[in-house]
Length: 114
Image (cartoon, rainbow, N blue to C red; front, side, top):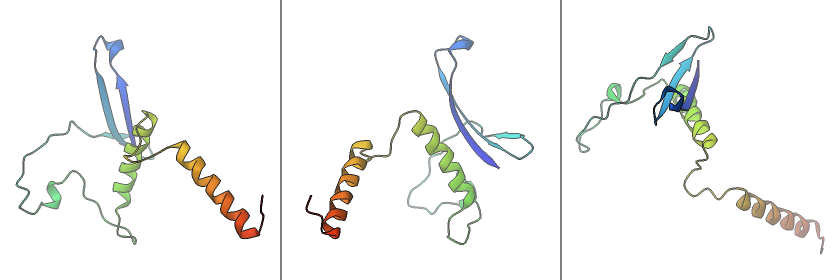
């Protein structure tokens, strides 16, 4: 099974809206759509019934559920494609600075004074 997330503009349908499609595709290319999400008010002081949560799945040896990881990866990929980045993510400038710092540290470790 592979999760897919797509934001699609509905302008060609005459609507000034966008829709978010979330679906899972199996090896036979059949899809299972995630229906419209419904928010339910709950008492935060009470424990949550895991079967009422958005997604509950068996965990692997690392303690994480592969199905949830795959779903989150699809959501992250769609958000990244849209231009969203995690809070605190500095982007290419930060990566360039880290690489320059590592290069300087390598030179110091090798005894290069340049």
